[in-house]
Image (cartoon, rainbow, N blue to C red; front, side, top):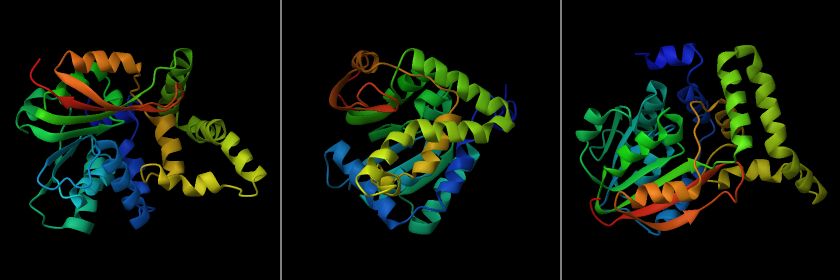
Length: 276
């Protein structure tokens, strides 16, 4: 079995944690506040006080931090050791020695590990499960971590058909060939941002969207560009596929926010009505 380090070395996996480590250098109070706002908005709450929150694939740790600041008792885990280190760093900065925030290394594909975690009021996994190499298994695994009456909040890349297959090929090239990384990052930057920059310039506000990107879940535009082109393994799904899969496991859709058929994630908030 390949280790995480060997998967990256062999070009089978993007170094997500390394990208998140760089992101922490630009993380500020405004970005944290935006992450809190987006979590409150999607969950339809003002506080998470008294609730347990599982961050399955915590990445930078930003949303574990947001959930903890909203009052939740948080468990964070990630497969990538550097992502675990990022989450631990945010805990150290903002909630040092806090018994209500646990950070661990673990895989969403490891059923034995997951069985030890228990059940949670909120199970959160944003933009993670499609990077496991076994997306449907991963989604099925996290559905079992929400308690009856609990919430499942996931975000999964939209299936764009041929476009998704082309991006998959580019992601493979990016991870297999180091010399192609900079050109592919520039290509992605141009593809994703040219129209927005032109519109902003015509309005007399050059780069307004780029500078204001932190309003989108508190993230960073450049680090998201790198995450997109590098993000491999890579799987996609149509909204109706996610809906049907989760419904069959005892979940009712409460909120859906799509990327309007384009590039990006569709977001789903489900309520667990009972065991399937």
